[in-house]
Length: 240
Ligand SMILES: [Fe+2]
Image 1: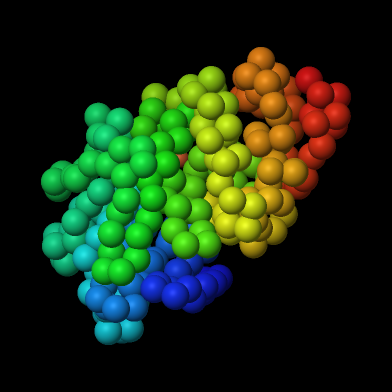
Image 2 (image 1 turned 90 degrees about the vertical axis):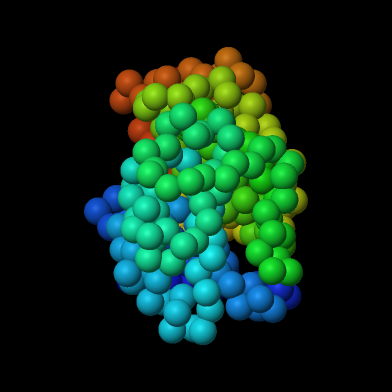
């Protein structure tokens, strides 16, 4: 299993890639001071994740969700039952989430706190109705809202391509040097910055709603290929 680790002032971010049949990326945030851990979108391997946290001498106290899709949440109830971890999800995602245990809700601009580590909540609807991203010191955890040179589809209940366009305009406000971390490794590389994506990710490069919606619709119909590398606006316009 491919892993990466980023150590910041108050926390360490660890990522496990290609987990489960849909090859999800699982993000762990270890707060240095409190020795607590938040896991984002735990799916497929509950025991492995719990063991990983315990082996480091940390306590798994929090589960932060980006959106309702099963490949992001199917280990949540098992982890809660084994650890008592607290679940947090976006307020607009609650009606879609198939989770038995109690969930706490957050909304745009709220701050998640894990010991001395803070994460700002950014509502990014589009892939789902109430999807959220978590912005930490130096890192954006984006779930399926944004991939490396790609983005999540708009084909399941709650999805909306116009909403996704507006979410992309919000994500363009995230600082250039922030690293982007996605729910799946679908692009031509794993490590990227927001600056790199703002200049090559078609979903961020397209600057009008009309073109954006056509791009998403054409892709859903199989009329254009899903990109895994950087595209310029002229190249995108030529595809449509
Ligand atoms: Fe998804």
